[in-house]
Length: 77
Image (cartoon, rainbow, N blue to C red; front, side):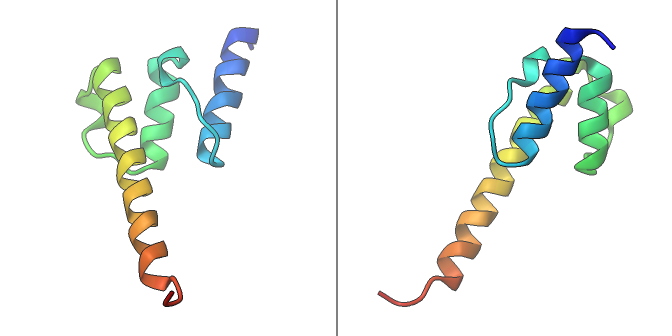
């Protein structure tokens, strides 16, 4: 496997574990694989740019949901 692709994949794994990744470094196939894991519908019809946007949007939604859950479960001050 090409070194650049391995680096991009390791960054994407880091992002899934709470780190950050630059999705612009990933290929369309890599983005499609991540979108499949996130159950994003209509992947086959999405362009590479649209896949990237959908993954970023799903990450933002995840962060918002996590924040809301944390607030709901937080002990009273």
